[in-house]
Amino acid sequence: MLSVEIKDGDKQVGILAAVEKVFKTGSKGYFGMGKIQIGEKRYQVQVQLIEIGSKPKTED
Image 1 (cartoon, rainbow, N blue to C red):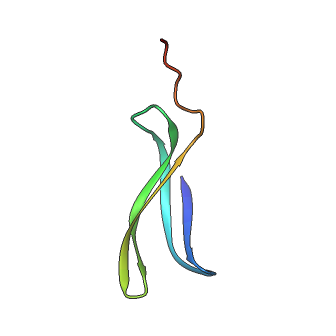
Image 2 (cartoon, helix red, strand yellow):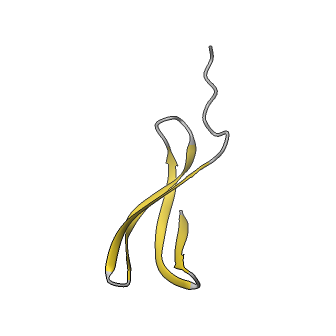
């Protein structure tokens, strides 16, 4: 699991957990989603980290 820190300048406004995932395409990486509050407003947040070159090669 990764922790993704969300900042507004130097101020931390949220932390999002991203867990390992194998995407539908076969690519490997991390995915997380959640809600954070910045001032009076709430936001829905998503993060994807996809390993470049991790998608399995298909045979032609």
